[in-house]
Length: 402
Image (cartoon, rainbow, N blue to C red; front, side, top):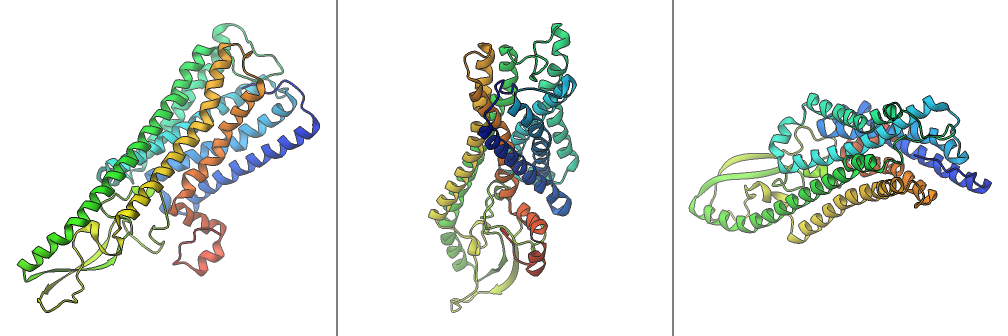
């Protein structure tokens, strides 16, 4: 990563300084809030949420270390911290950005499993050891991708190509290495994230379609059964999620809306509380409080076809945003980095590279809002941190914002 070699005019230095400091504040504050939520609220500590924590840690360190160290270099065009710190900064920069990408892939894969293999996933979701292993694997793989090359490239080649007043990796103009590394850092993760999120949407769409068929057929089947059997079970609906129970719980983790359970609810959020009572039915009892026993058609959770279509569109839009933001933040830098290396830096103006470089760090500011902050469980934890007085006054109400 090369800083601009020219001295910038004063007004531009001020504008860029304000923008850079603002980015640092947003990155640090947003990701620190996610980390604090885990400390404050123990109910967040399940497998899928640990991956959000891992993402927040990598993005937090980007804002707390990588960007602040780069700001003076970017504004002055000279690296003044010595070669040793340059190596440390490069290792941390490549490590944290790559770990952030791998964490996004891990989150998408976890969501994919939670929807496509819901039963098995729920049985394993509290296995902390498995989650910790995946988190550690992300950091190890992220380091192995660039770390050894940054540290040992100069020793293997026999000389350094980096001037003393600049700081960038020795392989910066080695296009075949960058192309190979970018395959693992961007191209493969992007295709994976797109595949997982598309599979999630198609799975949800299919379930909603099946649920619609079920709810259309159920009343006929139930009426014919009631006529044949004078006695049966009356089902008294007490409380359930508004999300159709034909969909796995994890779908609410894919796209959270205002239909989540309140904080006062306990137990498995996928569980509907239903009482069964044996009664005799009489043809004269027309006003019997009877609900269809099919879970997917229970009570107020029943949806029209239009509302299901609306939900499908909302899910598709949210998942598309995840994929698009990841692509927009990473694709320009990856492509320009390879092109720039292939032509020894002479075919791409430096300011274009700088813009794409900052897009990577912008992704670290967006991630906390794109992932944890979209979940009702995290919003409740954030309300405890940011609005403790309001939370104590209205403990039964889920506070969406302050």
